[in-house]
Amino acid sequence: MPVPPDPTTRHPMPGQPRVVLLKPLVTSPLIEVGEFTYYDDPEDATAFETRNVLYHYGPEKLVIGKFCALGTGVRFLMNGANHRMDGPSTFPFPTMGGAWADHFDLLTGLPNRGDTVVGHDVWCGHGATVLPGVRIGHGAIIGAGAVVTSDVPDYGIVGGNPARLLRTRYSDADIARLLAVAWWDWPTEHLTAHVRTLMSGSIEEVEAAAPRG
Image 1 (cartoon, rainbow, N blue to C red):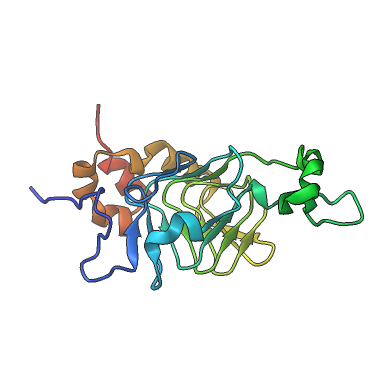
Image 2: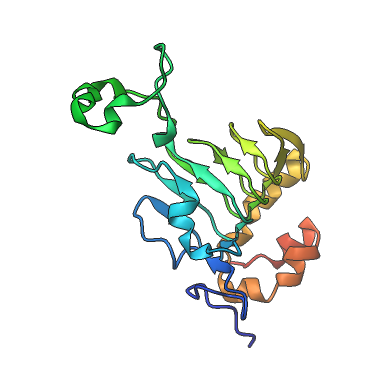
């Protein structure tokens, strides 16, 4: 029986330290990553948690699904990036300490859009930026350099700054079928036997390959 790759391996590609699987790498309880989701960076891919998840000061979570491909420089801005905008200055004086810290109440109640959630099988292109509280659907593609300010539908393709929906990869009916088959939840051994179908087959073939019972 063919042996599937090990989802606990930090570097899944021999001789390519620039590629890391994120699930065995992250340590923060506020970051959840599914199996086989990877990040590619020639400088230090293992620093994803500190270099690519920014302003993560609050309780909100970053949740990334299984089988996602994150290109170099993909960044997730969290709610700690927000500043007050209702007064003359946006500068966060209390965070600088000293007597200014007496006014820390001015930083309470800032906008908080909640958790940032990325679905399964999402491809984020080089240098994409995802803003706080955004939800990206399963099977979506985020174009290189895109700045994602609002939710992305399942199997949507977005690009630009701010990112806009360019098209969806399938019709609504076919998207519903793909979501129903949920191949990312198949047992790894079963998935291994149907890699070619998942990468180049039709929806009908994927449905036919789904585990029974």
